Amino acid sequence: MQIARKLGFYLVALWAAITLNFFIPRALPGSPVDAVLAKLALRGPVSPDTRRSIEVMLGADQQGPLIVEYFQYIRGLLRGDLGVSVTYFPTPVTTIIGQSLPWTLILVGLATTITFLLGISLGTIAGWKRGSWLDSIIPATTIMQAVPYFWLALLFIYIFSVNLGWFPVGSGYDVTLVRPAFDYPFISNAVYHGFLPALTIVLSSLGGWLLGMRNMMVSTLSEDYILTAEAKGLSPRRVMVMYAARNAVLPSVSGFAISLGFVVSGSIVVETVFSYPGIGFTMLQAVQNNDYALMQGLFLIITVSVLAANLVVDLLYGIIDPRTRARG
Image (cartoon, rainbow, N blue to C red):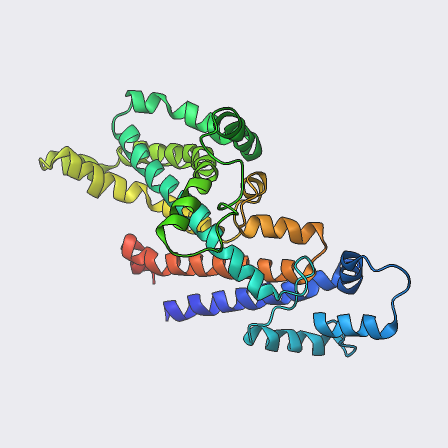
């Protein structure tokens, strides 16, 4: 029953997100047809037949009531039809998302996971050994988190790319390669190009996870069950991992779930600075070109991913913390 209630809640949230995703772009000024005409740089007046053809191609030729368009939009979603992109006209939106999504999942997904695991591990040790050298470097990591993403990215480009020449200035892979392929030359080249963007994300986000885990460890170590475990003669490592860290990590798990959901949105600033071909860079291009269909598709994918990530963690939280099952 509890799982059914959660599924029902997330289905309602998904329906609300889809509905808002339909109405908000239609409330914005401008027309996708005018954006295509401007992109094609057509001079002089456009014939009604030409305009009508572009409307049909973009799916903007419906003249019926708004509610009819809404149900047509829902049917299009069920068929996987998100419209045609203006920025990359006449490429379908689903094709653009399919090309950009793997880059973001690999870069931002791996960087977020590495940051979380590293921050939780270091925070556990810092909280367990208060006053050690590791505990003293936490202020430096929080300062790194306060530094703007774009400034840190530009600094890395200036030092490691422009001056030292160790890494490329931007892009996701060498343009001399024929096409993306799952072979060693391309994968190694993609890792080489993605190292600096990933390093920017890790260093900018590490301080928050480290500080949060450290403070939760300090709070958890004062609980009675920690003193009981120590009085039983359990090894310090077992007390630290199985009793203290296991309970201290619970708030961070929820934050990590939200972070995983937003992985799909990419890191707009980092991807833009490094010209990385991910979702964030694609979204910026869509906004700059008034590409409503592409923006609509990207927002929908981001919303679904955030809801899915929260649903998975919500269902798994009872396994991580058995106390939550007793409330069901």
